[in-house]
Image (cartoon, rainbow, N blue to C red; front, side):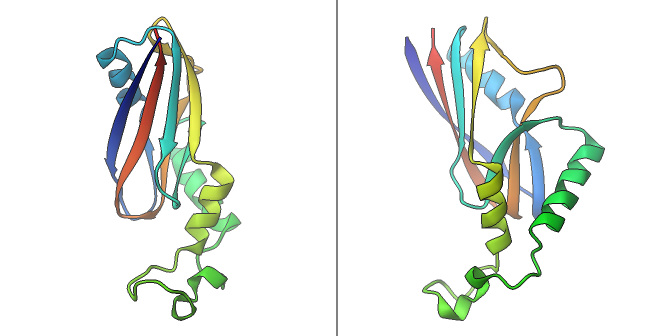
Length: 145
């Protein structure tokens, strides 16, 4: 069995920004010639998330609205009391982003069979920026033969 590691780089837009990273994962599988095994994808940031769902324009809009309504940025969150925390003065008020990331999760594991991610017809691995714009990194570890 071999183990291969990749770091995927994503430049995100402002606010909540959703990226389909299936192509990047598939390219890494081909590069490392992994035919059967597991792809483990992990976000390296506390204000981003990973999820498996459909990457469709109207659903992406709905996801952004849902997260914004569920965890409103404008609510008074204690983490946003910047003057009470030991942090840089330009620290953003982003408690809502941390909370959304916690609910959504930061990793996904996808089986690989015959060199293909075992996802449903409409499923994509979504990298979800919750506090952009930023340059982000995603760790991809591929296990298999």
